[in-house]
Amino acid sequence: MNHQIITTPAGERLAVLPEADYLALMAAHDDAADIAAVHRFRGRLASGEEELIPSDVVDRLLSGESPVRVWREFRGMSARALAAAASISAPYVSEIEAGKKDGSITAMKSIAAALRVSLDDLV
Picture 1 (cartoon, rainbow, N blue to C red):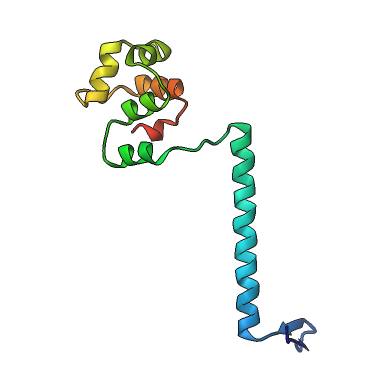
Picture 2 (picture 1 turned 135 degrees about the horizontal axis):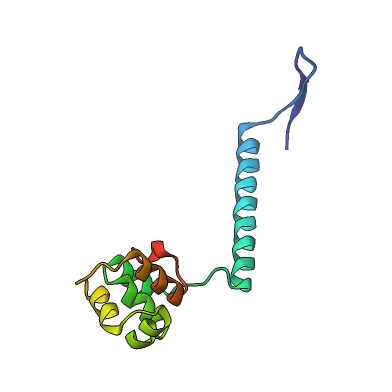
């Protein structure tokens, strides 16, 4: 790597290098940041703070299907089991999944906790 060290009138030392070398350094820095982010994610995944979501689940959510139903089925729960875990009635869960009712904030928080997702994942 070709470079030149210069000193400013204020005494600050600067390294001058070709633009191609500078761009290569920046790319390496970006790669290092990406690698560090992947390592952090893997640590959270190993500790259970993160999880991998299959693409079919994501596709269903993006297509507008009921998030409560999608997450419930992904978790392998019946509507009745979800209702019991969230301390709400099974018909209420059914109405929320069918889009007949929005679900109160309290009910949606309980459902989110039972499904181990954030409230934002459901609304």
